[in-house]
Amino acid sequence: MQVRHVSSRDRRSKRKPTSPVVSKLKKTKMKFYSSYKQRFRVMNDGNIRRWKEGKRHNAHLKSKKSKRRLRKPAIVPAAYAKVMRKLAFCA
Image 1 (cartoon, helix red, strand yellow):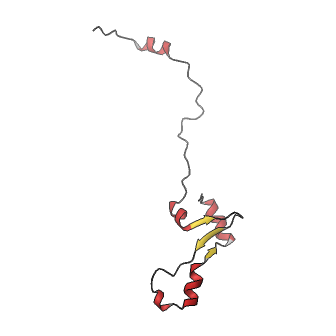
Image 2 (image 1 turned 90 degrees about the horizontal axis):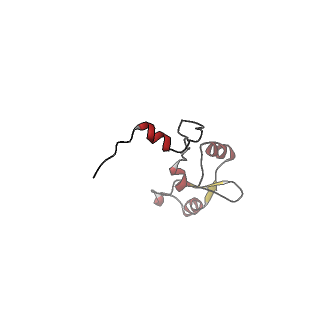
Image 3 (image 1 turned 45 degrees about the vertical axis):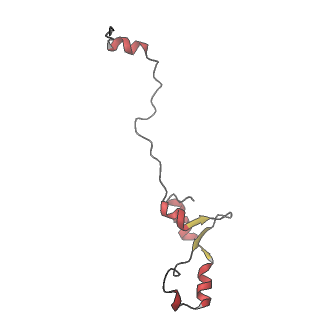
């Protein structure tokens, strides 16, 4: 089998014309914090819901009333929610 040598000039002439390059820098995508996905949820009205801390261990020391209150979700304050949105929070 014969192999024909193709010069670089011939190769270039057969190529399609290249489109203009807008930017040679790679476009970066901002990653959001993956830990936020587990801990927070955005509600329909835009508020961010979080679960209360303090119920994982030493529950026997807490009253029934306090354990019951820890079961309910809380809403992140507006100032913290604003910062979380700036940190590319999306869940």
